[in-house]
Length: 202
Image (tube, rainbow, N blue to C red; front, side, top):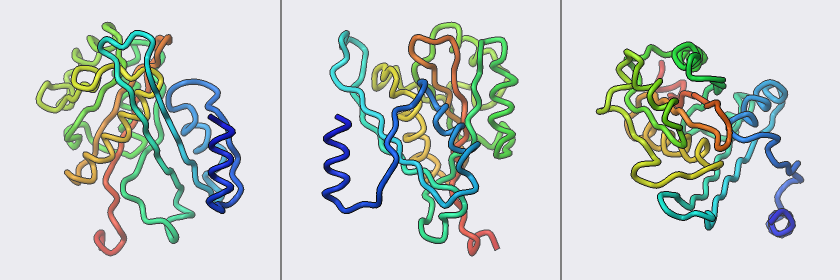
């Protein structure tokens, strides 16, 4: 797969890129990129693919491509939406504080969230989310991708960000994602908000 990707990239005449596999599942790659490349005029292209799960029942094949850029590139690339720093939630007892921190990275108030997108949560994580006394944890605002698409495994965080991005663009309201990490006991929360151009803001 890596060789095919490199060959096609070169054939397209695109600038040289540093190709790497994420060191760990989830949105850690975004968190690391924000820490180390936010001052550079650089972009991060995330490709997430899950094909032919070994146990296909209630699972989903998915492919997601996300092009992420920092503010230094916005003169050349106009954002469709803004992905804010993700927050790792290490256990269910940290669910409330972890989501609060994810909201604070924007910042945005809980009642401004118009959609909550979840994927690959285990039973305990889902119960912890539903126990929160927050507007976004109400059934009317929750979209559980596992239920209507199937479980997407390691692709879940990127798939949830992608659908939340489309929802943010369409609704023009911030969205919240919460995705579990397959084989782990932690989750990632992040906010996706619509992009408002300086002309629209003035």
